[in-house]
Length: 118
Image 1: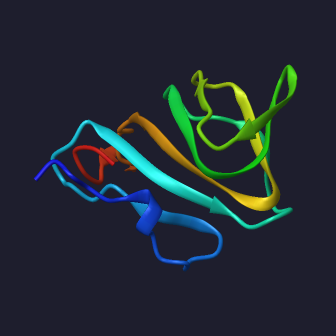
Image 2: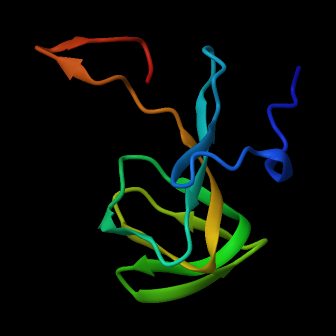
């Protein structure tokens, strides 16, 4: 079945973090709905080795980048190129955004993969 979830029907918990994640095992994409309560943030950091598309599902806030601050509001879509600085600051109503990116390879321990993709 192609329908995965409805973002307007997500549960209220957790208040912070991944409110939804794609769970299908044989996929090439990863996707999450990330939730930040009002006034909370994810500090600016260098992103992973994958381009990431974000779509603001609900609320408002600020996207922090190397170039400064970009306001975010419901409906906005942004592309965060791989290995670029990004951070998020939730506004007064909180911030929920969908991320979509290529699935990253599994973590490796001692030179051996722990899975085929992860």
